[in-house]
Image (tube, rainbow, N blue to C red; front, side, top):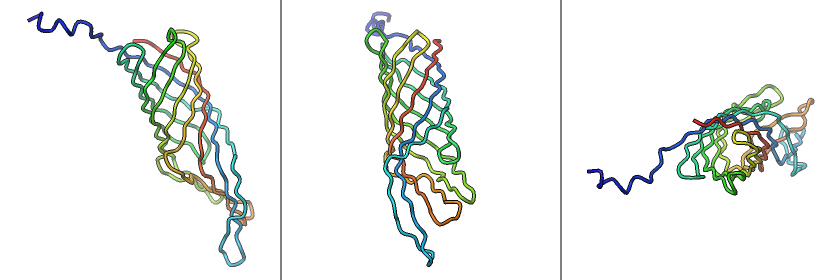
Length: 190
């Protein structure tokens, strides 16, 4: 009976890593300014292409199942604190690969951003889920600490919030173009 399973002896028991990821988020948007006319209609007046909004903190728990050698599957639930326009919960599904003596980290996958959809009399944020495709590169400084830079692009063009000027004459609509995140990854091996 043991000979029957001899070919399985090279299979390694899966390892699990748990981590905490802290990131700063930069949203790159285009903004359209709509001017209201006396009749109540509005027309697009100005299109600005590179509006950057910087949000200092987002927190994630990173669960990684090491599939084989330096390759792992990562599930990353978290929350981003980005004021009313972009705050919400996120759920990421990634493949993570370590190379060059496990010092360089390459990550690719899908992040789902569940926008909370806040609003008041001068700002309205959509409450929809935004699918973002992206990748990261990182450097493993120690066994339990890495620095990571990430780039995400929404899977479709989306207007994710609008705001109004104080006199309600202008409406500003923001479309998310891409996201860059800078983070620190703290890992605990199990």
